[in-house]
Each structure stands twice: as structure tokens, then as C-alpha cells.
Amino acid sequence: MSETKTTADRPGTAPPAANSVDRYFRISERGSTFGREIRGGFATFFTMAYILVLNPIILGSAKDKFGHQLDTVQLTTATALVAAVMTIVMGVGGNLPLALAAGLGLNAVVAFQIAPLMSWDDAMGLIVLEGLLICVLVVTGLREAVMHAVPQPLKQAISVGIGLFIAFIGFVDAGFVSRIPDAANTTVPVQLGGTGTLSGWPVLVFCLGVLLTIGLLARKVKGAILISIVAMTVLAIVINSVADIKSWGLTTPSWPDKIVDTPDFGLIGHFSLFGAFGETGVITVVLLIFTLILSDFFDTMGTVVGISAEAGLLDENGDVPRLGRVLLIDGAAAVAGGAASSSSATSYIESAAGVGEGSRTGFSNLVTGSLFALALFLTPLLTIVPLQAAAPALVAVGFLMMTQVKSIDWDKYEIAIPAFLTIAVMPFTYSITNGIGAGFVAYVVIKTVLGKAKEVHWLLWGASALFAVYFAIDPVEQILGVN
Image (tube, rainbow, N blue to C red; front, top):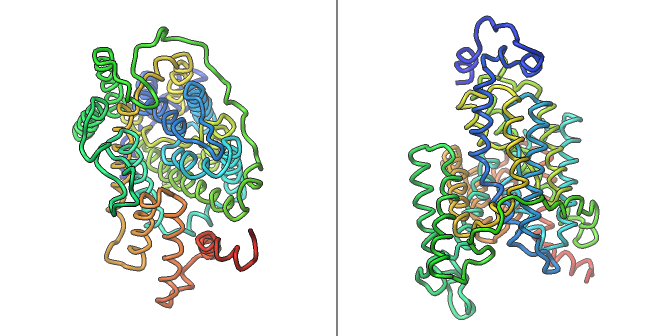
């Protein structure tokens, strides 16, 4: 497919560059125009703008070890700032139509796996460390070793598991699923709605949002997720103005006193680079960073290759132009996300919407980044979205990530069983780290039992050993006499 696109999208003889901007971004050379790049930049923004709503909701709904929550207004500002800056940096430095923003899945790891173990500053410090390590991997060329260490089906299983985890979070946050109050006296840990049945206007908004989102996705409407969020927010505002409902949760949908406001940069720079090591054990910290790298690094590789292929930019060997620089910028985006307390930023597959509109160069990123910068001043408008209007997007993203399950060979037990455990353990234990660990350990054990231990990369052996200690940390501490 990439060869076809490469031939079709690049003219045999490129027209001369119109000006210095054209020459720098190679717009004419790649068979594009300024008009296409601008349209593509707008399309990418409106397709991924939902992150300005979802990221503050996911991070803002979680508490750290000390019960502290991040301010949603400040989170919205931080999310928009990092997306604006790093998308423009990718456009200028990488010259690919590849936008960046806080990664869904990655923010779930931070909110529900890392923050409960430490302070928010410590958690964001781990994000900075993760980004720095990715940069080191890129610069030293070790990314190839990491790429080959984990079998492709396990990488896909990790994405699928995160998708189910995100969807579960969406169902719970919206009130569609709830924990049974007296779960000790029943074998059922969760239930439908708050009482075993669906009730209340907020849940109705969620259900309608899910139906609208999946309907738009089925019709392949561009910007389906954003359209659903906007439509359900309007509906929620109308319902709330009539019924004055008090059970919306984190955000009550009501029209703000003002639409434009000065950005609140209060979270910028609030991170502790090594504070996590004092709050949790070294093994736990290492595993958490490893989890972040896996979630970020492999998703980025797939996104970069996929977008480049779609745009017809792969070379004759199927390689991405300036790949090292692109991956380095992506690693820097993780650093920026942690430093701004908006979670790790990464490349977005939604950039395909811009490619579909004609984007072929990084110039479209200037448009997308500028729109994110404009959003900095629209925080009051963005923070009126209730969980019930945004949660359908989490369900939709879960579905999109789930589609990778078809690429796993379920007839080959030596990979199917570890993949299944990876997928199942994540939502069932409410932990992405546990899912990855279960899959890794199972993979190594099964390969060993089948006499194929030599097929396991040494990096995977090391990671599995760490996970084995992680799972058995309590008896290990008892044996060592550690309190």
C-alpha cells in the first residue's frame, strides 16, 4: 500500500518551490499545496481536540497518595500548551504532518496506576524520566533492541488491554457501571448503574453519547468523537438548566460567565525528578517507567510509520524520513508533558485525518499547533463538559484500540495465552502494569516449557524477572526481613 501511495502522491517531476517556506517544508516537492496543508491542519485539530476535554477529566478525577487532585482548569491550559508547542516543533523539526498531545492510555497509567503510589509532582517526574530515557534510546540506537525484544503480538495485546481499561474507566466515570457498596456480602463486585438499574438524566446523556459516537464512527464521519462531545455537552446544559441536576459529578454543565480567559499556567514546572524513589521501592519505580516506555514507544512507532505510509512519504526501503529526529521530538514531548503536569505527550494517529485532507508536510502542524494555542484562551468553554458527555469518547477509543486484537494469532498458544493474560489482567486488576507483567512472565514461562528459551530476547528476560519480583514483593520482603 505504501508503494502505491508513494507513487501516486509524488509527482514525477516536482514543480519549483514558490518561496522559502515552500522550499523548507518541501510542499511542492511532495505534491501538496498551501491550501491542502491548511485544510489538513484544521482537520487534524478538530479530530483530536477532544483531548483538551478528556485529559483534564482523566487526570483531574484521580487522587495522589496524599488525596490531592489536580485543578481541571490548569490541566486544560497545560494540555493545550504542550500540544501547541510540540506539534509545531514536530512540524518544523520533523517535517511530518504528525500532531502531538497528551496520550490516552498513558494518562490513565499516570492517573490510576502511578499517582496513587506517590505525589503528583513525583508522578510527573517519572514522566520526565521516561521521556529522557526514550531520547537516550533514540540517540544510542537502542530503540531497535527494544523494538525487537517484545514480540509484535504482545505489543498489540498491550494496546488492546489499555483500550479495555480506558473503556471501563469511561463506563465507571459516567455512572453506567458502579461498585456495589456492600461488595463483601456478594460475589458480584460491580453493577449496572448506581442501584442495579440505569437511572437519572446524566446516565441518559452518556448512553445517548455512546450511541451517537458509534453511529458517527460507523459512518466514518471525521471528527466523530469531538462532534459527540459537543452535542452531548449542549444537551447536558439544556437538561441541567431545566432540571437543575446535582449529580453530574466532577463538572456541572452550565454556560460559563465568560468564554475567553487568561490561561492559568499554575501546573507548569511542578515535578520532582527523583521524588518517586523515596515514596516507593526502586523495583516499583523501574517497572512503572518501563510500563510508560512500552506504552509510549511502541504506539509512537506504529503511528509514525502508519501516518508516513498513508501520506506516501516512506522511502524505497519503507523507512520514515528523518525517523531519528521524529522519535527524538516525540521523546522530548514526553518530557514536556511531565514538566507541564499534563502527562506524557505523544504522536496522534488522528493525524491521519489531516493526511486525508491533503497534508504531506510539517506546515500543517503550524496550523494545528496554532489552533491548540488559541484554545489556551478558551478554557472556560472547555471546562463545562461533564463526565457523561466525555466518557463516550473513552468507550470509542477503547473500541478503536481493541481492533488490534484481530492481528494476534489465537491458534498459537505460546503467544495467545500471554496476549490473553495481558488483555484480561489490565481491566480486571485496574492496572496496566499488572497486565504487561502477567503477559511477559507467561510468555517467558511458556517459551521455556516448550524448549524455546533461546527465542526470548535478553531484555524480555530481564523485564520478566523484575515483574516476577514485583508480583512476589510481599513474600520477598518477608524473607529479607524488610518491614
